[in-house]
Image 1 (cartoon, rainbow, N blue to C red):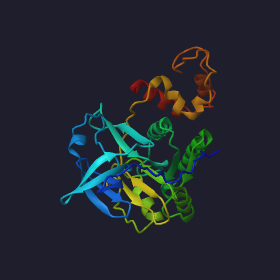
Image 2 (tube, rainbow, N blue to C red):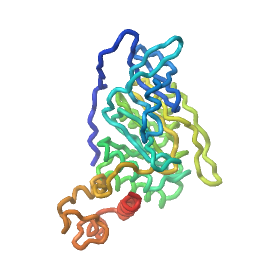
Image 3 (cartoon, rainbow, N blue to C red):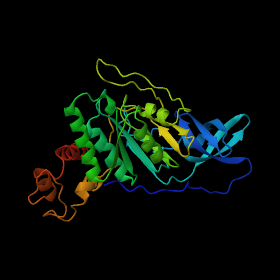
Image 4 (cartoon, rainbow, N blue to C red):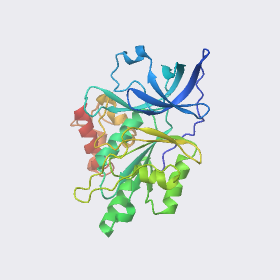
Length: 322
């Protein structure tokens, strides 16, 4: 069973503009400065209007990649005047500022989660955190299990085949992939065509390599994963939007070690696990937390093996973190 991904036409944001004020899309943001692509395709370096920089916000950066903005040229400088309403955004907890929110991207159609089958292996808990966060924002997720060409034993092949089947049965689209396998790269290309896609994953899983494989013109910087500790390096320093030659855009994000949850009320956390959400109303208690209450349908399904133990353990980890 595959997740249903709604096709969305590029959204047009209209606001009355005064003379000299233009609209554009943020394609890269380093905090103080942002690169904005204007409607005519020109990319300009911008800074924030003074009062916007002073706004109190829990967000680490006021402007996010994918934001639609209005800007004006003053002397030789481009200034962002306003951020237009976002149709959605994906947040995660800031790495060093636990109470702050990092807006990963805004105005996206889908999330491509790149997991690596080997070198480095992606923990299932990471996948579950990203999918739960995406579900909370009603953003479709697609899972790419990358580097299947490196699997060198029948045991490993069977393990990752079962992992792929697990997420497919839940309702996510899953593509086993390798940059050396033309068929899998064509599948990824079709998923990206004409859409605004955020690409995320841990360091070294091959995000940039996959993007380069399906659109070599981009030539995004990549690096080799260390054989000593199987950890990748952060080749992408800041999130950046790239235009695809076959239509659509991808937002390449820095590799992350973990994906900290933010703004998810743990009372409703199970709603973002599709297999648990399907059991709503079947527990003995309407406000069941699926921890230790008697008559819990979710725990019954876990005991029967109809909900994966790995998914339930991810749920517990997120619940106690909240």
